[in-house]
Image (cartoon, rainbow, N blue to C red; front, side, top):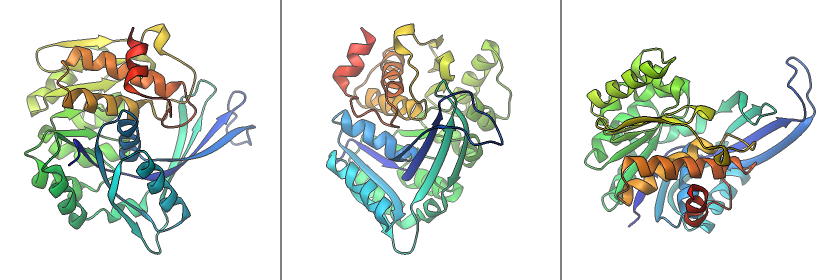
Length: 305
């Protein structure tokens, strides 16, 4: 049995990085890369590179992209027996345009295939999750599927990555059922129907999540760091200069999520969890890929020192 069961998206990620300042409504010279991604898949890959036993459940098209994406995870030791390849479907695709600093300016996605993550797949995941220490979901799942997954696996600690502002809404009615959540500021605003513009609002948001039943809250703030609370301890932690680089920010959040999950299954307190997870995010920023192939426990710990 795997220590972590993940149910979420698997995609082909296309990323554009301009050489100079972006000019809208025009063609911008730059580099374009294609890699395999999806929040759930990226979390699984990060954990696989940390040598954590992981089972991943998702759907992909039975096409060249889907088969290659699954094979890459399998080569890392991730159990992909729960990934279903769908004949006649295209694998979900995500395209992001970054600015010169590596932050996302715009993204487009076609996630239709992920609508096919069904209750039957959740039933299969629930059997695997019986032996896991934690279950992670992303909101590439539909609202009904998230609800069904909570019903089937709510006896386990549940982790949620809300994926995006648009998709965060899908988990809004169930947010108190999650043990750990990692929204960014805008996703937290959607989940709570409130504006978060300053430290006081961050603290109010943290308390609101705790009051709803969440045990650990991590609100990521891009270059601003992360605000965290467990109802007892609350703090805003900014990245140290040595933890910031100019690579792609696309996968930094996924690395942070994977690190939080790693810390959960190893019993780290929330302060140590934040330090560890910010270091993992910093490593992600050092790579143009959504997942830094060099990420490992030893490299994360080296970053902290």
